[in-house]
Length: 210
DNA sequence: GGGGGGATTCGG
DNA sequence: CGAATCCCCCCG
Image (cartoon, rainbow, N blue to C red):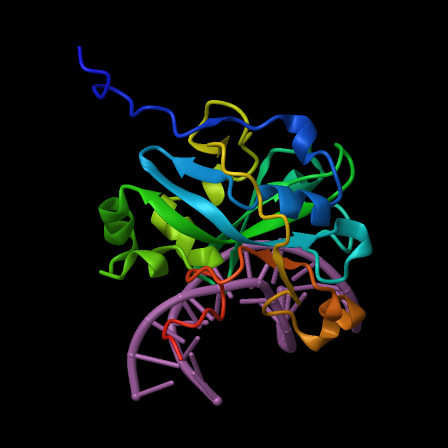
C-alpha cells in the first residue's frame, strides 16, 4: 500500500531525555526549532520562556510542590499544563532532574501540519502565522488540555516532541518574559524569553514592513 | 472558607 | 483597556 496510507510519515525523531536535563534557560534554547505535535497537527517551536521553579518568583513552583505543579518536579520531558484566566491552557516542557522543579513555556509555533484542523479548533480563520502565535492559542490549536498534563513528550503518546533536523538558532532573540506582574520582583527583568529572530508568530512581531 | 490574582485573548 | 471565567493558594 502507499506509504502515505495509515499514520502520516514521522515528522522527526524522538528527542533524547538528556537533552532536556539542564537548566530551564539552557533547555529553552535547545527547544527552539523542535517540533511539537498532537495527532496530525504539528508546529515548529519559535518562542519559549524559561521558568526556574524554586529560585524563580515568577514560577508556579516558587512556593513549593503542590498538586498543580506536580509535573514540574518530574523527570525532564514531561508535559506541564496549567489552566489560567478561567479559559486558557498553556503547555510547558519539564526540565531539570527529577525532584527539581523547572519548565519551559511554549509561547509560539510555526504551524506545520493540518492547519485547517487547527483553524477549526480555534474557531476562526486566521493566516497561518497567527494560528499558534500565543501560549494558549497553540494549546487550543493542537487540542492540548489539562487532561494531557504529566504525559511524557518523549514517548509515543498524544503529544510528542520531535527533532526534524532543524537546529536551534545560534543566537536566539532574548527578551524579558511576557505578562509578569510587578509582584515577582527582580525576576521580571531576566531575559528568559527566547525566540527565533524576526519570526512573524513571535509575541510583538511586526506584521507590516516599514 | 473567603478572596485576590493570574506565564491570556479578544473586542471595543 | 477591560471583560471573560475558573482555579489555585495564601491567609484568617
